[in-house]
Picture (cartoon, rainbow, N blue to C red):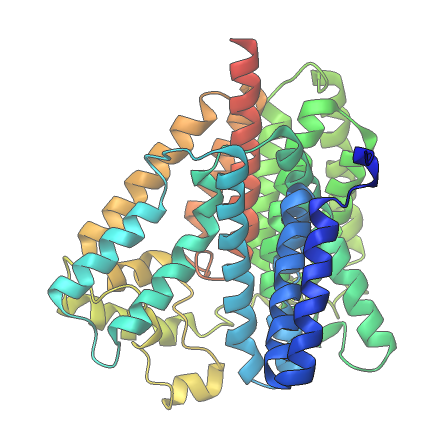
Length: 443
């Protein structure tokens, strides 16, 4: 009688069967062999991701944070730009589905994705913007809801911990990758736009948005455990944010950190420690002011000295969106219509190299009208309120400050449609999930 240990396991049987089928295809139908090989590679990658879902999610977040579409645009060409964004967001949705299958589903009643779905349906019923097809609107809908996909899954503590840590280090990975490309002579690490701006692997504005999420993540972890590592990451990410030359993210990041250190306490962050950090920040300000002359080559210091105003063409772009919104004030023109408002051959696009609104409040007014925008705002507020209720007092205060800062930031930047939104809201999903798990354990 054969011992059970000598019998082939299911994996070996499957491998033997695959080799036999592959050999038959290679001999009889070579074209099918390559298709079979591709299917096997996809299946193998799926199995690997399934067994290491937490690691795969953290890696995906870092890839999304690097905004590789900008690097590939410069190295390969414009065709790689939209394709890379679509692949990154599709991978995020696929990982969210895997999380639902692995950890279980959750009815996230106030998830902002519901508002985009409602705007999509209303746009089809009302009539889409001229030039916007139903398939284009559907693609925009998928891209719009992708950042919130993880909200529909129950997540594990390990998943949450990995995603939060990945958010903290993602800007450093992008800078390291950009430095490698610069040393190889393939792509510059800094770009000149009103002064030198750090772009790393992406674009200065996208890097700033990702670094802002990293600052929030480092602040949450600092108030949670009080570790020196999180304090160092907070400081390093602030340096990266300054080097991007993005004024609005720097302002909101500074406000959130100062308000937190000034008014939010925690067992690991008593008043004495917070006072020392505020004192250190206060001493650093005059040092930077004295060195502003020598640092004027950096964009943020150059703009402070020159008092530059609108550099993104917002004042030229906004009238197009205001006129489009006025023609359909209540229901808008459908999800994705914001891409069709500014004629791509117009002078403003040729000069500014963008047709994005740089104002999410205005773009959503065009796509969803007053009703759609109100629904999105209400869902965001309820989403934040519901999930932060179960957090600790310090985390609750920080996350609510983050959402308020995000709402203000949306007046001057594209914070909902960029890939960086996937990073911010994956981080939010991780904080919410960890808080819910801890509350359930305490209960």
